[in-house]
Image (cartoon, rainbow, N blue to C red; front, side, top):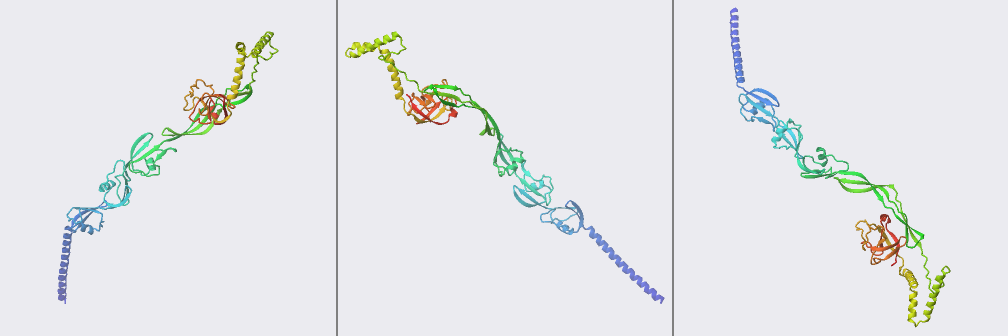
Length: 456
């Protein structure tokens, strides 16, 4: 029994040894196989998103290695070396992730994918050169990410006319208002600008700024005195007398003056202020009818106031005259009589003739339109059509007439104003119009309706 047991146990131990030996071999083989598997892997280094990873792989290409490492590759991502590149020890795989970037170039918006690290690289990638005056929303060193929104605007030239100068300015401003703000051009409240501030700017546009200034100008002017004519029954008809010589007044006029670029373009009277009132020139005009002169004929009785010698002389003369009348056939006697009485007869005849002429030659009153002028009026030479120098003779009583109505050289009477010489003409004096010369006060005379008659 014991022997059988021993035999059985001996066999059992032998079997166990065999089993243990097989397991050991398997383990050894597995270990060897594992070691061989491991030592036959290729070592690669992967760089992705600022991370560095080292990996051992049995993959044969870059693409297989990335798949083995569970790294997703985007369509626009950049892999270096290429995906189909065969792996070798110390292979370095660089993955550059592409970013979704928004670009707005000169108002045109588009979306692009890029592997550029910063704005400068992106601009090189799209072959865009930024000029000195161009606008770029980000600095060239700005890092690119999927949120990056870049705006670029190319500068263009604008010719500016301002303050008497012409200047060409490169700008990216799209409106006049933005241009003024960007280039620090200040406008005053009244300044004008063309085109207007709300208009858009285009390439090679012209921009004009007009400086507008409004000021108040106060001017002191003399106010001509008026000439007032009054009838005076104590003065004989045709005579005048200056009662008051008159005095000019003073007037302040306030003007609102507009200047554009230093030049006056408008002047508007906004207020008048009387500093000193003018005094009228007062002239009285005689209306008294002169007493007619009585001529005493030699046949009349001498006055009681005559001396005795005069009376004797007059009596002799009277007798001689009577005798001559009676002897009408005696020429010598008639001649003597005429000669002796020539003095008194001539005087009487002249007075009678003058009186008759004055009464018979004056025409009837007619209505005329009257204005007044001075020697210094606009377009006036100061010398009348008949050669009278009004500047040297300011007291001349001259009136301008239409020669076809009132002949030059005529003496005329203007009712209420006196007598004048028709000694001048005027381009606007046609028909029943007269222009009265006045040394002063012509501006206040205006236009009046007067009665005129020709004396001679």
